[in-house]
Length: 103
Image (tube, rainbow, N blue to C red; front, side):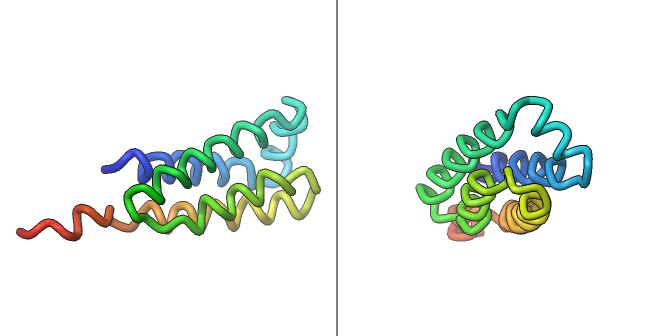
């Protein structure tokens, strides 16, 4: 399993947590929106690693957008949930280099 795939699982799980109504918002606000900055960095790192090995990047791109607009209350919750779905779908796909190896 590649580092990009592991980061997709991790960021997907974190986005799912942040998308939980009340709990995710309370967590973000109580830490003065720092989790959004941390998630932005994680999404950028995941995007770069995924591009290097040819993995799908839609979840990471959506995560970057989410991190930038998630301070808007209801929009942020919906975006976190959508991002989590896309990241977890991307993470569940096999790594491209493993598909190319002959049996």
